[in-house]
Image (cartoon, rainbow, N blue to C red; front, side, top):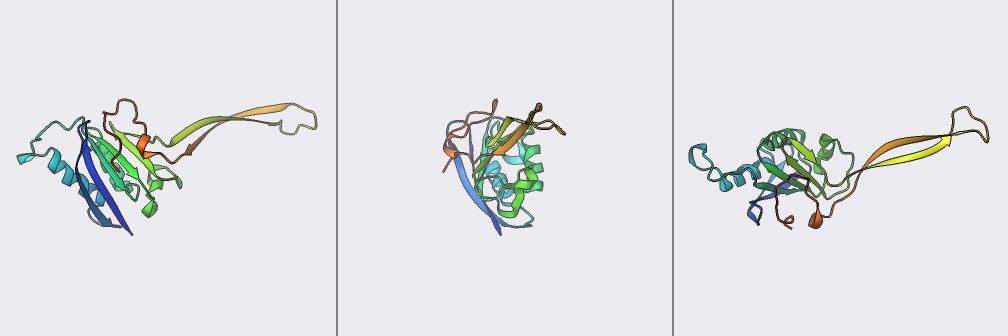
Length: 175
């Protein structure tokens, strides 16, 4: 199985420097890291490690046929402490959604990373109240209400995906 990633970055006005990479499962450098390092070199790294420009409000966008694996998840969450990332996952090759605590989520799915935090616009939490007879009660006896919280995942529409609060401006997802 091959993970294929396409990536680019935005300064809030347009997407730039589209590049792509692919990696086999268990590759030493995963596709998303390879694309990120290539884009990072083009976007901001100058000579001797000094940045060409401030990348704090730059948004890095990756579209791939898999969710990032646990190693890449940890890497990009750490990177998101000083940078902003969007992953558009079009499939779950490698079954990596479980590494994000998701069970068979519908795709496409987006993951926003900022400040070490993750946000899933497809995640919907709702409250459900059910009524049932009280335990051990006979016919025509009292009913008990139970309230529970249910979290589900909906596939997102990449063209109209909502950014989380505080996330820098960026154009609609590239297609």
